[in-house]
View: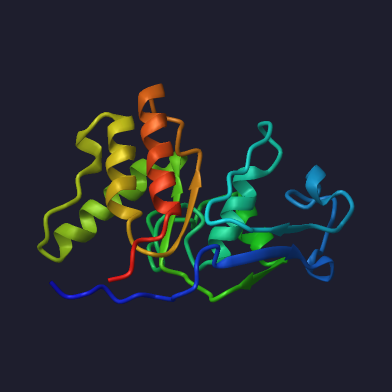
Length: 198
């Protein structure tokens, strides 16, 4: 069995910090820059561990911040991996995640863009996109949608989040039962422990 190419020998977190560039903000009264986290017109977030969990009340901008980080990594703000375009944005009104990304600066060590941006809101669209993409090249589709919503999530995490990379999960627990939430925590723990070198 051939050894997998290792992207880097450095440990995660590959994104060390993000900071807001105030000179890039055109209007502080517009969303998302009018969120409380940007009230001082300064914002810096440091990633010090392989896994960072962001929690807070609804409407505080967690998903918008994750969309922006996803855009910085080269992912579509609707979710997916690098180069995936699972959702047509032509008629979209809200593009706050991508807009916020344009005012952020990321410090990478190194810039690893392999990975995935998972959004619970757009999981159905991304799963359908993956099925169509597989069928287009004559491969078997991953078929995450034939399972219950929560089972589809767990299967997705187990299959798509195994490689070294940066993974952004927005509300991954939303469809999971308490038992499956514990299973997700076990997966997170396994991801945070580096694989032994051979």
